Length: 459
Length: 154
Ligand SMILES: Cc1cc2nc3c(=O)[nH]c(=O)nc-3n(C[C@H](O)[C@H](O)[C@H](O)COP(=O)(O)O)c2cc1C
Ligand code: SF4
Ligand code: FES
View (cartoon, chains in turn purple, green):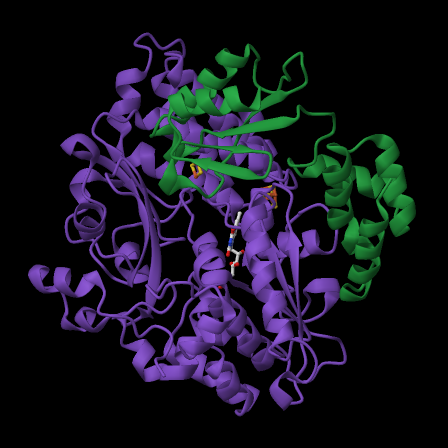
């Protein structure tokens, strides 16, 4: 029987040899978006070794499962890169209250379109991973939160869940192990902020998606005050392979400190935008030029957003040698985020793009914290001034000042996510702002508007 | 207000959550699926059904962008203009749809057939530009294809 993931050598092997990247990539095989046809069907999934990882895990102790995941070094794919096994170990072993697992399929970060591929092409690898995780942390219920717009993918996943129930993989006394858990899909209704884990829990509780102040963290107080773990859909989908092949095998894939296969989503001005499963740590330029057919119309690259709209931008000249993993991107001042790469060609109006991003965060701010609610609005307004040719040299510093005052001063990371793109674009493309600024400033010296400072401190 | 079938679904969902309040979003979805939008009478109904304050239901309806607080056309055209779509003609698509139907963003055609709105990233960035029509995604869509689609739906 062939194990899930053992497909014919992927295209990467050919490519890797000619580019002389580390040898281990040659051995890379996809474990999530494999080339097996009809893998979304439970029979096919079983035929290729599906649900054997669950069987194996149920024969172990929950602690041993957590240990395996810890050692594998699997890190969260939802944006923050937090070590998954470590997060699971925060769950209390004994609890008078029920425990929950929330799978995060909100997928609303602009530039991110990977989780929907899992729902469509390999839903069972996610379901199996979620069941293993539920067993490891002792969750009696798995809530799968999916953005409301993904109606089609919700329906696809529901079919898979129903099939798994029918086969006895979900429900009471799973495979005779004595372990029971249920799985319930919860449909969001259009709010980016509900991807933030505490907002997501408030949403499943049937309320407005307001993020909660942390601590307490979800492991202490999550759904209805009960111990809860939140993980991204892709993170969870990595678990079956770890159980089947062992942590040693997994931890050797890609970048040592951030190992495993990663679903990269490349969009914008590339010839062949795609979701690609490749090891962590591939060269950004390889993703763009080799895997995605290069830039449209053979143009040069002006800028790249490496990991979804919240991450800091890179200039076209900075891309050479940059690898796509948490540590490598940190070195160049940005982050892996959701691995949603957006490529902009040399003719792109970066201020226009930044304004669109600023509009997004302003629109999506839940309004709880003053710096985020007001600051995102101000940033959008100032940027719009530049688009209208009304911006001034002072506005550049004002914009930066607003961004700096949001960063770190809010309940959740949406505030930071709104500030980072602005900070990085000003840093990297200041000249563009200066070119656009009105030449006759009305104020001779930049003065901090007093009410701005006051409002910021008045959180 | 809810069909028999949906009421049965509500009963089946109840044991899956610690509170009935958790059913607010699912029940609002059912209402919208049946009636196309969520009226104040509907909010009152949901509040009574789930035994939660009507202010709570109102708070939820107004927080989430997908709940329609007024009737929308038979076809709700939602054009994404976020970054990846913008870089690939999302704004042109938006303007084209509005122009062709003779409406501004947020408006409904006089025959109540089409409503056009601009939306944030729909997770279809690799197949930009795109537009959602009710529950369906139309990806990688050209202006000619939009014309054909609108023709078919008119
Ligand atoms: C504003 C905001 C939006 C987020 N959106 C998502 C999302 O759509 N999907 C997701 O998995 N994580 C999202 N996150 C991250 C979650 O809060 C959380 O870290 C993640 O789901 C944990 O899973 P992981 O450890 O497996 O990555 C978001 C965070 C913030 C601050
Ligand atoms: S940072 Fe913004 S989105 Fe997050 S809680 Fe505060 S106001 Fe809401
Ligand atoms: S930017 Fe339009 S779908 Fe993502």
